[in-house]
Image (cartoon, rainbow, N blue to C red; front, top):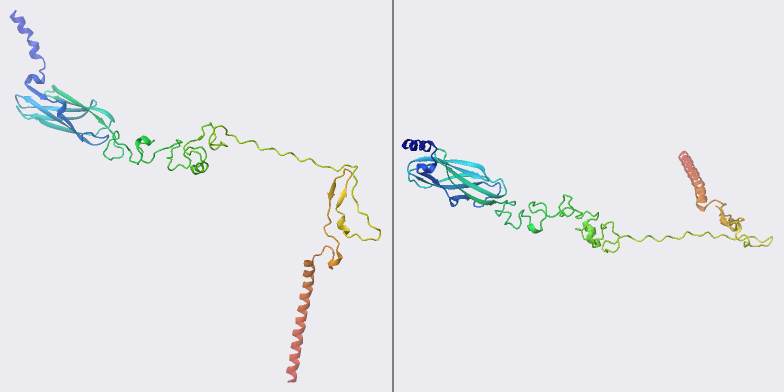
Length: 325
């Protein structure tokens, strides 16, 4: 009976001894974990501190492991004295995940035995404009002067609103609503440059003949002009004529003949190009300008010959005077 009891104790002595079984416990609590800065931003350098309190009756060594959302970010060795003071260890960290993050710190004894574990949770925010205020608390994340509630692109300092979604910010887009009318044109006619269809009748402002009247949008059809009806002189009507005496001259001369009358009563005009007029002294078909041009040519020739005659006469007279002298 005693032998059986002694044999039953053998597995107990052969089994692994936990860290606390050696009278050495690495104690850590949630309040022993801290971060600098307290609320780091996404992709901002930070440092995690952990204060470990050993409770040992002998000198020993161990390690402290740091995790962020379950991923190991650092492993720091630690050595402690018998009944020693608390030890502080730290690791550098750069958050790469936006949102809630759990930081966990585990301790291990000298032989790898798992000791205490503690964790804290914090929110990793962005600081888009770099003003030191997280986007969740910052009323203007991109620092463009437009509050986030009014900013279509709160994280882009170069864009505030793109009404028509063409990739151009309204501040540089000449047609904000892409209705085919420039913004300045819409301001002139009274339509809304931010609305494709100002009156909401389903027709775009450019195609709408009445863009401010939701009850109509089409322009009225233009009134058609009646085609002219030709007027004809009936065959039975007589044509007025002028009767002159046999020897009486016609004061109108050839100008009286202005056309012919056909059988259907319609007349056509055929005015002579040159009317005879013997009272002006110019032949028919010749203008005063033509007459002056012709006469002027002969006048120039006559003056030229006269000048030559005077020249030779003067030369001859001079020659005789020289001979007599």
